[in-house]
Image (tube, rainbow, N blue to C red; front, side, top):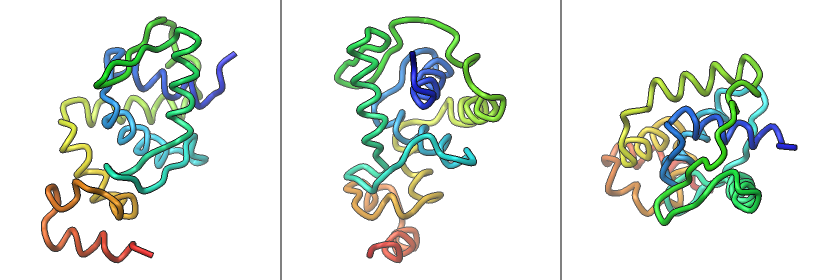
Length: 145
C-alpha cells in the first residue's frame, strides 16, 4: 500500500515523462505542496533551496520496493501504474498545472522561480548569489532568522 504523499511524488514523476532530476523534483514538489490546502510534504531551507526529508525518505522506500530507480542525476519510475488516477481531483489539478506550467523550465530556472516565490527557502542557498540580483537577494535576507 502506498502512502498518499508517495502517490503525489509518483504522479509528479509520471507527469514529467517518468524522470526528473533530483533538484527539479524538490522544486516542483514544493510548488505542488504550496498549492495544496494541506501540504503533502514539509520543506526546510537547504544548500540548493527547499529540501524535503520526507520526499527523500519516501523515494528511498520506493526504490527498495522497486517502484523507482535512482541515477546520479535523478529519479525514474520503474513500475508504470496510473498514479495520477490515484489522486484527489484537487491534487490532479495541481500536478497537471505544475506539469503544464514548468515542463520546459531548466533546473536553474526552477531554482530561481522558487527563490522568488518562496524566498525563505533560499536563506541557506549556495546558488542564490548566482541566480538572483541584488534586490532579489535583499528580499531573501529579510527571511534570515
